[in-house]
Image 1 (cartoon, rainbow, N blue to C red):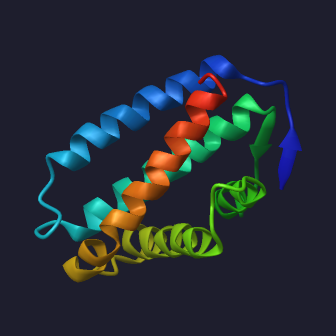
Image 2 (cartoon, rainbow, N blue to C red):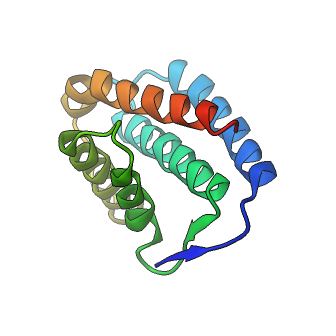
Length: 133
């Protein structure tokens, strides 16, 4: 459920710092050798950017489906095509199966999706800058 809160720019800015740390980490990771870790980190970058954007708008997802609803809230921004929304959700599912069920992700998945993932991250970062986060 998405709830209305007071906009929290300071928390959003702190999240952006974590995003930058994750980006540095993932850039030094061998994604062919560690595809699960790469997918988990790319998803976390996207999720954290989305969370920061929502916080700056005075919104917060809570409850069992908070991650899914956080991503779904991005659909209100014209920047994101349906295919990008689907990819974000697919990353969420793969990350959850990897993290909670130990499912392996083949390196070809991340190799095939990396450029699209990086484009989504770039769009989220531009949106965050426009919101002065």
